[in-house]
Image (tube, rainbow, N blue to C red; front, side, top):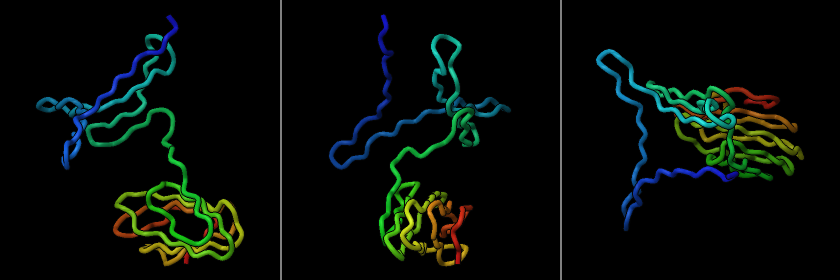
Length: 168
């Protein structure tokens, strides 16, 4: 009758007082005597009708995350840092808008964290000084489009690539 399908929500119990909320767990099936454990798969309908179910995300029995179609994207709003200040460690992407020669800082992240920084507007150099930086002490942005991709591992930020920045 031209109506939308219903939704299913799985919600664990709420904590009371100072208690913690419950955990939602989804498990793949255990393997047999010589078999491997099962995967967890989240699927979507790629069209309408039967036969259009498509795997959107699979976590295999060795904890690899597989995206068989589409791509991984960051949907949160990037930080826009105007002038001098701290590049945050709570968003995946930061846009730098310089207002002159600006000093920028970056605190330590958590193991395995990635951070992308892109100069959006250039009114002077932006020099980033991470708290711990494996390849030097600073990263300088001096033109629109300059970028760096960082990975926090082994207690320091590591440059994984970029364009136009100067590492010193």
